[in-house]
Length: 147
Image 1 (spheres, rainbow, N blue to C red):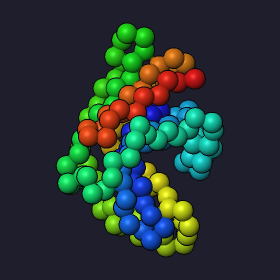
Image 2: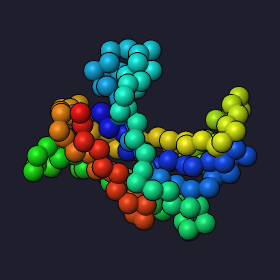
Image 3: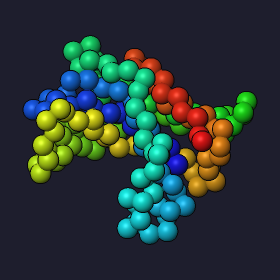
């Protein structure tokens, strides 16, 4: 199950330095069995992708006005499309960063995935060769092919 997210590039001091796109993919079949299995559902090669670039914080006038769109294509067929905007987030970036930094130090900074607002229905399962595209203008499009 893909999880399209805005990602904050955060300095070692806790300041937002930029933004990018994240795809935090989980194995839905493992995740739904038991909430305690969530770590196992997200720890495998290819479970998280970032990119295609970092939009510097100074170049983003108001990131809460950005929209996220996700498309899943199987061959030439669009099997899912969803869209949301960051204004729907319940927590502020500052709250998320504060919570992350409470018990952790990041000497080189950190990428913080902010959470997903688009979840495909249960009948949409990824197959090998599916293409996931997550778009956040003006950052660009993160494109993943399922292995």
